[in-house]
Length: 475
Image (cartoon, rainbow, N blue to C red; front, side):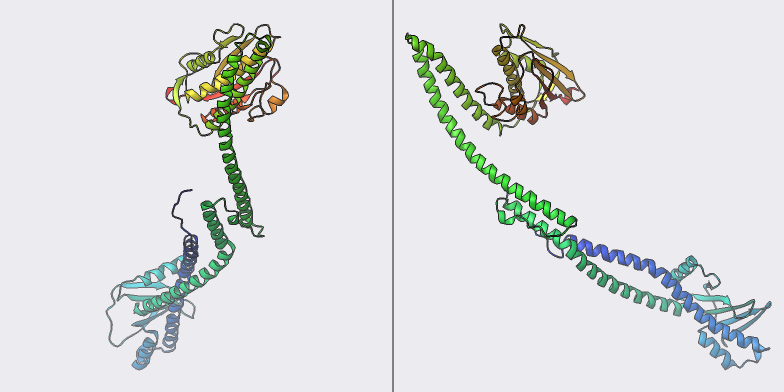
């Protein structure tokens, strides 16, 4: 384990901050969507209030035949109540005007026609007022209370804009308050259901990663039945399996070290015994001559067994060093090392063209081929019922791989050997074997990016299929 700095998530960091920010952003977005129609409605209501004052003035004008006869103080009060410069009443093709005693020069006039009550027009009008330049004059146009009557009010836009700004400020404050309260409420709810369980899982993973052999750090799942509960149960099961696996691995490592030492000492002892047996075999005693070969053979098997166990342990840490190599050269060298080239009785047929490059570790893949060839040769040598023993290597090319089929016409494998063919210490096809050869061969093949499998088929003989990666630079 490496001592790397670990970051423990706090309650208000990481996912929590993102959740709160997302909730507030969504609420504010909803408030903006609601704010625009609300602002348009507020402006329309404000204009309608001013228009009602104009309608009252229109009734006065309609009741008085001569507008000029109206007292000046009455007209000024009408205009002051509406906050207007002038009020125009139009009916039956006639226009009547009430204006201030001191006329005002009207510049930059903008019209608000209350006869257009569709939402887009109201929203655009509200936004136009909100961002309007100062000192604009507002012309409000609306229908009177009589048929075919029209009322116009001319007034400064400044009061409407000030009221809209105040209204918008209040909306913003209320929106922020609602967003804060809602975000806090949702956060507390989601925190209990999601964030706190996730933080608990995160802390457990960080602690367990630092000390996976500490069983007290294994997560105790809750009784939740949702996805978080499933995650807790699966994480607890995974940590339990990992704890057991690491403990077993440590025990196996200790046991393997002891076995390696025992094998090393045993191999030295057997080598000394083999030297003594060679000297005994030179004696002229008939009994010694009869028993010595058996003794030598037994010692050779014992030494080979010890050597294979040591090799199996070393191969576990051997890292492949792939290189570009000619497949025909690899097969020919393996056939020579397996004592098939020039064999007096076993025919070796390798149908592999020259120039076909594979990307593998030459030493490791050479050992795989030697193992397969040697097993086939020993099976053919041990059988006396085969008239023309032969080992054949055939080739099939695919897009990025080559497939070697290694077959012989020997007696085949017994059922027990086929069932445990690639299992160490159990897949031996002959008496006294360790079963390590094919187990090592498969591990080496897979480490080099290939596959090794046994092909079931009708007897006689055995067939293995070896798939190897091509050299991509030669494709």
